[in-house]
Image (cartoon, each protein chain N blue to C red):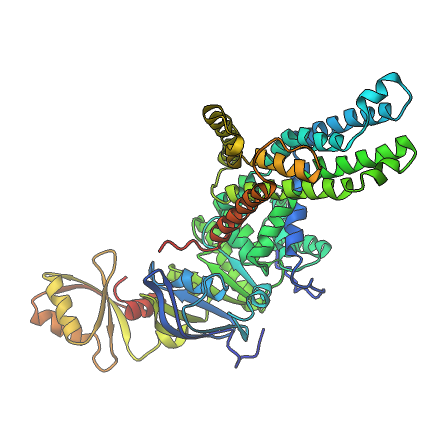
Amino acid sequence: MGSVMQPVIELQRVGVRYGRQWALRDVSATFPTGAVGLLGPNGAGKSTMIKALLGLLPPDTGDMKVLGLDVRRSPLQIRARIGYMPENDAHIPRMNAVTFVAYCGELAGLPSADAMQRAHEVLYYVGLGEARYRLIEQYSTGMKQRIKLAQALVHDPSLLFLDEPTNGMDPKGRDEMLELIRDIAHNKQINLILSSHLLPDVEYTCDHVVVLDKGGVATEGPIAALKGPGGRVFELRVKGEAGEFLAAMRGAGLECHATDEDVMRVFVPDERGPRFLFTLASQHKVQVRHLRASVPTLEDVFAKAVGDV
Amino acid sequence: MSPIHDQGYRHYLGEREPHGRAWWVIARSHIVTAMQHRGFRFILLVAWAPFVVRAVQIYVASTNLPVAEFIATTPETFRDFLAQQRLFVFLVTIGQAGLIADDRRTNALQLYLSKPLTRVEYILGKLVPPLAYVLAVTLVPALLLLLLQIVFAGSLAFLRANLFLLPAITLFSIIQALLSAFAILALSSLSKSRRFVSIMYAGVIFFTAAMYQALRGITNSRTWAVISPGEMLDVIANAIFRARAVSPVPVYVAILVVFVIIALSIVILERRIRAVEVVA
């Protein structure tokens, strides 16, 4: 891993467009060493950013550096040092797992014998040791996610790009995958960028986050710092004209986000406190049926940066 | 949280290969994979049957048997042998229909292109297997036949008298292999189904030949041969092997047609081999 001062990725005013549509517009961001979450709603530009960083999509404007190398000038050198786990199902047909992973290792520059040895090791590491001689076509969705991780790890990259790594996995498999990702980032000294729309996944595995929205950076920073400004989050349920009350709270400068149920999450600055909520409710003739202090989560950071989730 | 299965990840401390050999990794893998397929091995085996027949012919021609003068070895023997092999060239080429189509079906392109290799290396790696297999049923047996002629005759007289045969066999085999390999690769990049690619390839070969025959019958002109790659290969073969020209199409036109097909294939590959499909 590089020095703490040296960022893993630097983007300066990067723009990428598909035809006339800008997928990334004027993006400047810095990804420090360690595990960084790349968050954003669908269409925010997460996958586009990863593909641009891999050199698969040349940026129309701006400069990008990965591991200190310019993406335009040294794409092959960069790709030799990174591992990429794509979002969708991807494998080489008619290969068993160990042959596939060894093949990927050779493509990444490992000698044949070393690639085969590492393929066995990495498959054990990701939990596919017993199934390594099976054809990948016969794998379940969760196993396919693991094999994608294995092919990204086989050449011992300095940086891993994981695009929605828990997609389609059952809860047990998802937990195991998150544990693996956490282990890679925190115990194996491999930098990783985790692109996900699942905030708990990012919160569990990453220390730092970059939130994208509409092709731009909405916010970035250490998760702890982003979650911890002065103030508290309250879960709130009311009876009465909730819409009007919500508008009143927003008018008073509070951050309010509706959740899937009828519970709102309200960020109240320290100087106001929960009493302010009761006062406001009373003024708008709504009853507060439920008020519970909550721990600020990444969801709050995300919602604050992007809007309602 | 569930425990991790194995925490034994180790960092790699060995040497890494320099960039530029990934094409060979791809090519080797496909060559080996094709040979693991029993049907493909059978085709390769059968493709060498004409070689055995020709070898017997060359042997008999080198003896004092009365029939020898009727089956004497001439440059046409080699030209005809290569023409005979066209069926096996077709079958071997069809066997490679999934080279890119399979990768497109399983989204493997993004895996390949996220590794330290260029698109040119990827295409080269995919081009080598059909080239190798076509040459294995054309160039290799034809050169072996030439070698057998020398061995059976016990002299270099035939080779000295027909020294052009060596480059002629090599050149024609390479042209045929390049044409077949580029065509199947380009078609393979257009679909996600190897079966559909096979049908497209067979369609191109047989449809153009049938069209030529139909137009020739209607107009009584052989110049329509330009629409048939097979006929163009015949024109080129006749010129290379110094045989009598049957078609009125000049050899430079035939070469141009082959060149255009290969160029078109390259353009298709350039547009289709991308990790990211951009729909503007």
